[in-house]
Length: 226
Ligand code: G3P
Image (cartoon, rainbow, N blue to C red; front, top):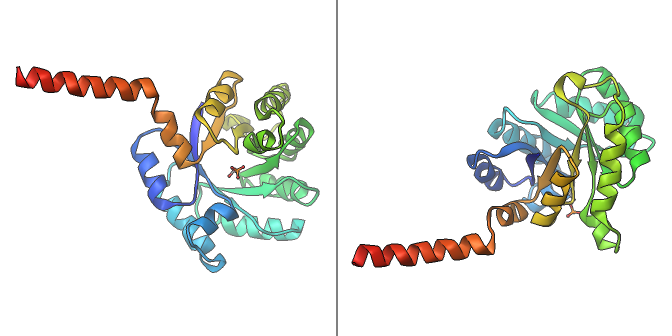
């Protein structure tokens, strides 16, 4: 499974990239707002992320509400850098927008996916990536992983005629909150998990690893002083 980072914070992206594990970046308007950025700086900020990550996909979300607006903004975002992926929330307006953009060779990440029919429609419209949310199902007392499993199985049952040469459409597990979400997503064969930096750091650690490191350090001190 590939790891994307779910953030617009340049320092977090830089650090995750330095680990040698990063295959992509996803952002959304809330994540951009968290960096203190203003709407007027949005495209320049996306350009900075793309500069930092020129060899991996960077999802930039459109805030347009009409199909025409999404196509226009999608084209503008795609022109920022070749690795931009235009993120669109699933709705009646975004399906034809994704289709138009796909036919023009623009990669779309269809987001806010909460059901298999939504995912199948996104794939059929030509989305390069499909992003079902896990944590937000858990928030309402549902089982986000079970929902993800349904989406992955349904999407993988078919081919769609877009992006096949590069292995698309790929399912991005989104709204990931915990290392266990990552484990479960990998077990059921999701292609990608996009993980916030804090959760990514938790994935590096395990209490037994930390305890082992402490006892190695103590033993090493004893060896040095012997
Ligand atoms: O990639 C989507 C993600 O940012 C949403 O996460 O935690 O707001 O549900 P969350």
